[in-house]
Image (cartoon, rainbow, N blue to C red; front, side):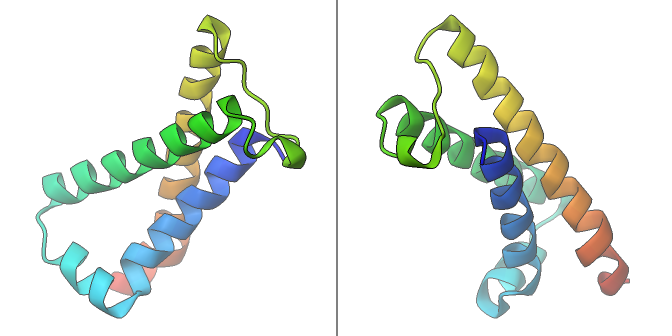
Length: 101
């Protein structure tokens, strides 16, 4: 599993959690569209930072997740964030939005 794949899984899970977990969904759905975007973006950034930090600290290297803590690693951080964003929005469009209308 790559760091991008882990971020994609986390992005999908986050989308589903905020849509379907009872207390969490009602809290999230009460927000306006801009606030929802900020919350989702911040959570995805935190997830990506967590993956990057664990990989830099070699805490998840046994899973084959390695990121160099260099300038190239920072570029990979952006790629991981983009992967999480894409997966998150795809999960929303396929598994959440059709059931909210």
